[in-house]
Length: 139
Image 1 (cartoon, rainbow, N blue to C red):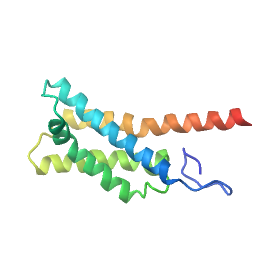
Image 2: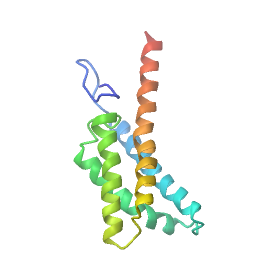
Image 3: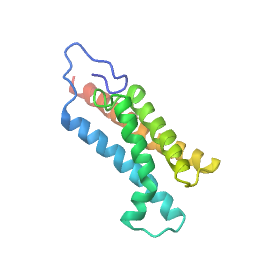
Image 4: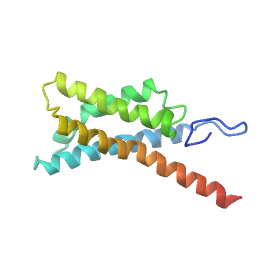
């Protein structure tokens, strides 16, 4: 399966459970990193509960998007997984924040969309590049 396109090769192996778990863990870490950076830039107390309180809407959006995009099938795919997971984390996260009375200022929405885009799509792009380079050097 091509990491960049999400297309299956005729003789390519299926995605392993380990690869899925690692991809999901990387996504979760990046959402937590986003929340941590945001909290520290606003001089908020750095506690685990505070971090989780900030991150939970985006983590919920991430989880829902993973299910909706069937990310377990192609966890490294940029277009078929990365973009929907990014959009879900941002849109669902913001909707949950709005529903709970948390801030959704336009500038925060832009920063969230850009940062999570760089994180959630960016690591997949880097992985695709590394996989291509690895294939080229093994020939």
